[in-house]
Length: 144
Picture (cartoon, rainbow, N blue to C red):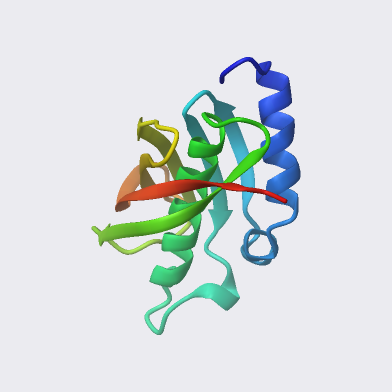
């Protein structure tokens, strides 16, 4: 986390997250922030399901992309933000119940940050199912 305290980095991420209307719309919250790792969660909301009643792939992607992007944000200077350059997703099983996205930095850099995320479904009866895996690249950008 460079020369910033963990509290400063977490506050920066929570402030940014609060401005994301997409995450607010799906009911997402931050579970944890660590150096190079961020975990988010969201319910499989009624308005964000596909025709069979499972979480729409767009919601799974958005949650995983945001978790990975915030993981990247923990690794860059405070005057920068990140944007997704590219992101690949493999959908492994249907999303239902509460979704949990665990984003992480695979390789940090000044110009590009390679990231990944796993999205899990925490099922009502207990247990966890791997819903998706994402891998992509973030680019630091001037936030002004």
